[in-house]
Each structure stands twice: as C-alpha cells, then as structure tokens.
Length: 304
Image 1 (cartoon, rainbow, N blue to C red):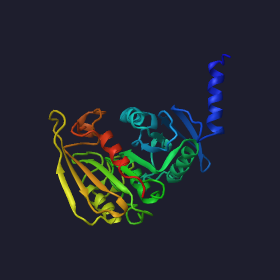
Image 2: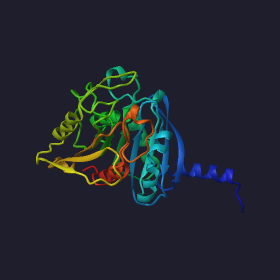
Image 3: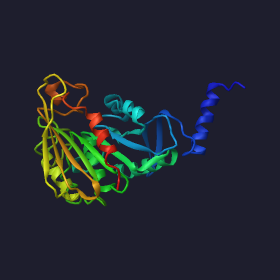
Image 4: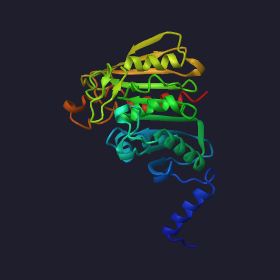
C-alpha cells in the first residue's frame, strides 16, 4: 500500500516519541523544549541510529551566533556521521549564553536548560551517558567552562575554543568530579585576551588568563605527574601560526587537561575558514584540525 510522504513523516514522528529509545530517526531536526517556563530551541543532528549507545556532543555558539550557524561553521556533522555520535547545537537566548561574567548575565537559566536538553535527548535516543561532552567557541567556550563547574555530573569533558574561565565564577567553581578539559587559544586573540583581562565585547567582563585557566583545572583534577610540552609539526603551508601542546599528567580518575596554544592565532576555530578579516578577529590557523582534535579527545575521555 502506498503511503503519502506527509503521512509517512507524521508516522515516523509519532513512532519517535512513542518508543523513544528503541525507534529513533536519523537526520537533522529543529527542536523546541520548555525549560523553566521558557521555550528554548536547538538543532539536532543524528547519524544512522544503531542499537549501541552513542556519544552526545553539545556545541555552543559564540555571542551573536545561533546553533544553525555553528553547525555550518564547524561541520561537525561530517565527523558525527563517520564515527557515530549525536550532535546538538543549542540556541542561546537573544543569541547569548549566560557564562557567568557579571556584566554578561542576562538572567537566563542556561545551565538548567542544558540539563533539561540532555534529559530530552537521552529519552529519545540511545545515548551513552558516560560520553556526553560540551564544546564551545568564544561566549560558548566560556559557557562550557561554566558547565564544567556546575554540570560535571552529566558532562564527561569539555573543549573551550577562544574562551577562558570567567573571573566571576572562578572563586565558586567546584566540580562534583574530575572532568577532562581541552583548551584551544590563540596568543593574538584580540577579543578574549590570552593573558587575561576584560573581554572586548559590548558586555565585557573579565576572564582569567589561559595559563591560569588550565592550571585551575589541572589542580581541580589532581594532576600531579608534571607537564609535557610538544611543539607540533606544521601540517599546512606557513600561515603565521604554530601550535604547542601542553599536557598535564597524572590526573584523577583518568581525566586529562590539555592546552593547545596557537602562537600567532586569533579568535577562531582551528582548521576552519577565516570567517572575518584577520584585522578584526586575528588569524585562523590551519596548523591543527580543531574538529578531529576535539573529537579524539572526547572519545578518549569518557566519564569514569
């Protein structure tokens, strides 16, 4: 019997919500969820669904962005299809995340929203609850830092690109468990200063330096076996940037703290396009594949 496409799509949607974990649809979805009485939105990319639990990666846009633009900027969907993990791109209220910087606090209950979002996706898809991760750029990176402080019971690791730990949440940051941290920052970032200070944006707010940020996480994770430093071999024609990897060893419960310093790099996701002129955001480095580095780090550091 032939079923019209519209009815087939309706039937698939009903099945998806009727038996959420066992019958789930693959594809791209624009979704809405109520969180604290506020309607919140997100974009979801689901690879071919398998019986095994899949990792979940939450990707947070920068200030002024949206989930859909972050999806197009990072192209993480391609890796999701290749390696079999779900990606969610949430939308901040008024295109901002409440990352804890006092001038930046818009009152949004964003941590509660992320908790509700994880609950929703876990109820609909076979998510590996030990492999839920957060990654963000700029304002989204600083918000990922906040999630590390307040949501370590749900998130195994986070990656912060061009976003340090906000000064305002540093004194009270007390993760419930050791959480793995990947930091990627450019020394010539003109917006989020590598050496700490006020963020260059309409709402400003102070951040720790990159060095202070990773040392905080290393101390929090009990890393006590020294630090290894490696100058990475260039992987692209010279572009005025070089990459140094610093790894803190001996961290508690198999956690890890790793810093990629992009010498000469600006406010950009490594390995991606120069989305604005270099005189505005600095150089986007081609000397490291940010996507592959982040996903490899995540998959190597589940919650223990």
